[in-house]
Image 1 (cartoon, rainbow, N blue to C red):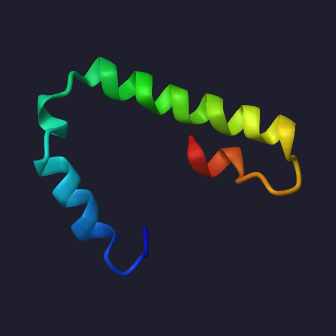
Image 2 (tube, rainbow, N blue to C red):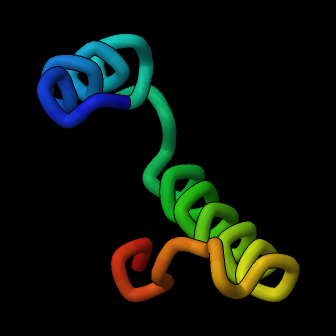
Length: 55
């Protein structure tokens, strides 16, 4: 996602059903993203995104 249209894109995703999701599901999804980044760090340590930014 490009940074120029970042706000518009996230707002459209929010309207497309994010309010209907339970906050527990959102927390779970955020944990899965962090988990996948940790796995990616183990596979390719030099190309991985920094974990501090993801949390």
